[in-house]
Image (cartoon, rainbow, N blue to C red):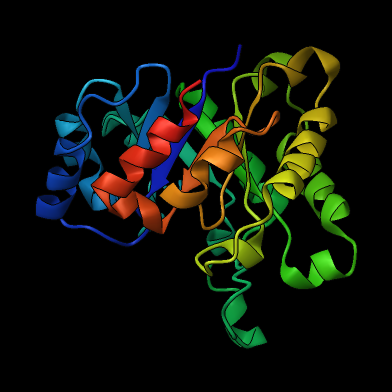
Length: 257
């Protein structure tokens, strides 16, 4: 049986004081659920040192080269040294696929990456024993054009190119429809489950029941139980709702079998 996973992506939020205060309120969460918080790089070591039992940390991104003259970048080795166990890869905000923002073509590229760079980041994380949380998902325009599956298939093929089945089994995939991230619009639970099932079935048969597939996109305490009750959703990648300890606790509790 796949163990549910709930990961909180703090994005560019929190200070040492507020981050420590938040994780201090996360003690006693259900042991049946794996819980991860992903703070900004500046807080990673601090939060890792203060996490209660049952809560681990992850990085929000990484660069694929171990070290060198890459100003402003963080390597997988540095995430590992700071105490991370997971790493988010390919989030729509790092891909430059904002969806909800009106950004002109000249600005879209400032975080943009390709499926190739996503794969390199996954390889870097696995090189040091960290678990990648690969984000995939379509924009509203792509969904309305009937291209959801095509977009996600392309993202999966690019990210996992050259991976063995054994390596695939060690990863997590989060379905995050771009149009639902931070907008308050949540994909209907049955539709989210349908897409998560599509993601699971993309993998070789021997891997399908090992890979955990999460849903992300305006997950909150009020809708978590319905989402996590679906057959092919193994938990969530939570954004804004992870910044409130009480609400995040309720989300984690909703994921418990």
